Structure formats: C-alpha cells, structure tokens
Length: 133
Image (cartoon, rainbow, N blue to C red; front, side):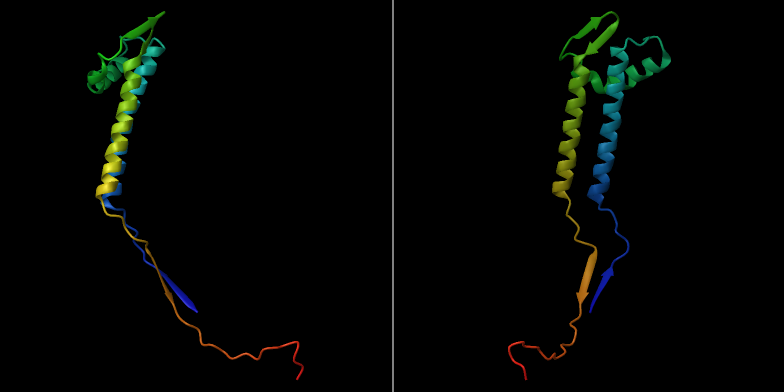
C-alpha cells in the first residue's frame, strides 16, 4: 500500500515573480517601438494625436538608437532601421536580466511528498509444472 500526500499552497518564488514583471515591462517597451515602426512604415499622419503620443512615449526608449542608422523614405513611408535594432537590443537585455535573476534565486523543490508503506508478504504456494505432487 502506498500513500501520497500533496502539499497545497504552491507559492510562486520571488525570482519567478520578478522575472515576469521584467518580461512584461520590456514587452510593453518593445510593443511601443513596434507600433512606432509600423505607423512610420505605413505612412501614418504625424499630426494625429495617437501617432504623436506613440512617438513621444517610444522616443524615450528610441533615443539611444536614433543615430545608429538613417531612415529611408519611399512615397511617404518611413523605414526606421534603428527601431528594429532597438527591439532586438531590448529583447536581449530582458533575456539577460531574467537569466541573471534565475541564476541568483534558489530553486524550489517538488511539492509532492510520497510515503510508501510496505505490504505484508503473504506466502504463496508455487506451482511447478515439472513437479506433480
């Protein structure tokens, strides 16, 4: 007979929680830059309130990358290479931070504890086909 007990209350570790917050924040930053890239690519009206708002917010995160590449303009559509570089760089930074958090936080053990009880051994009479007694 065996009995298995499962501990209730599987709490999330602090490192896992911090990793999720980091991934969320960097995901929002990357999304803002991606929306900026797409709006410029399709030639959105820069006088629109939403487009201006996206440019203002994403401009803070694009500032380190603005001088890397020039922009190419074709028929009013702008291809901003620095936005693509920024998305990749922010993704790598987020991955490095999460990897560092995982390396520095202790891992939790399994939540299942198994207890095995030995069953009594019952003597059985063996049947041997070569012995007919």
